[in-house]
Length: 362
Ligand code: FAD
Image (tube, rainbow, N blue to C red; front, side, top):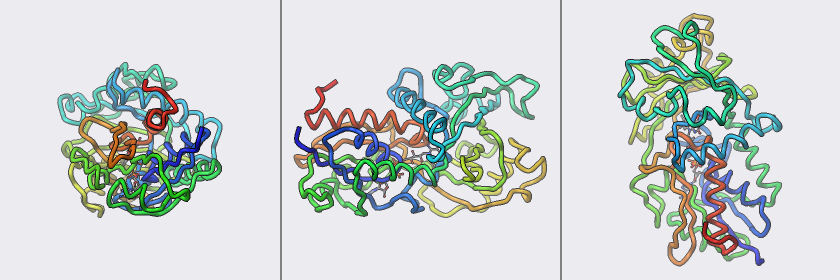
């Protein structure tokens, strides 16, 4: 088999996981070319801002649920066997308030809030929380073992795994998806296939310009206080654009207090009023953060804003010919880019093999 020369555009979790899985196969010379790389913090680069945990909202029987399901084992394997990847196990409590039933968030979270979601058979220790352990205003809750990823460790770890497998990394900004094959970014000078992992910026990349991709703004506060577990709730009293979750990252990564889900909002700067609401809600939901004291007892590391790359219709994993070149897309994972990363990358690699004539169409 002759070597296939591949350019992957994007070094977020989608591009890096795709590069990792593809680099484990023989016969590919892979270049990851991106405007932003691990270590950068930018509003066009979602991956560093994520919590990130495994908390599926995908609906039973859908492709999205399959991608999430295919991702659990690889993440659990990292948490169990590779501490250097910055992934650890933590209990995850999902709280439901009866007053949220019918709200946009609770409807979107329906599977997650269910007492028997599809993933109850995938994650360990799924159970209902006894009534006497429910906090004020909470009507029911489930709890399971999940993982939390320290993205500041995990993204560079993905790069190091790719480098060990011979992947080349280059900085580049492409105006058009076809530029990835003609710009000389690949050392061979000739490219067989381009993989598009541009996240939110797939909405602006020439040749793609996907109008169904838009941001859901997520504002967070990172604190030194520890929660000891992860928590999420079906809604807040501050409207559907606001959320409340807490997760402590592995290996000293701090605790993420979230958040918001502001659709169509590209604002990169933290809103100080929203930050106060985030901290107040987090302390009310998880009093152990401050030993029952107020938000002035939170030890803030920094405030942050990331934009989840939402796509109407869900993540796009498809192949198409653009200007005579095969392009395989893997973008638009919204708030699920980590928890679906291995499933999406596996599906993307299958399409790459199909387009390169290495695998028959499934
Ligand atoms: P990105 O990380 O945005 O990467 C895009 C890459 O493409 C970058 O390298 C960029 O430079 C490059 N690029 C784009 N356009 C061009 C161009 N024209 N030329 C060259 N390079 C280009 N997910 C979870 O699974 N669990 C969570 O708990 C979770 N929590 C989150 C919390 C917040 C606050 C936010 C904001 C997101 C959260 N997410 C979570 C979602 C997750 O972060 C995203 O789904 C994921 O990071 C998207 O990754 P990506 O690789 O598709 O895009």
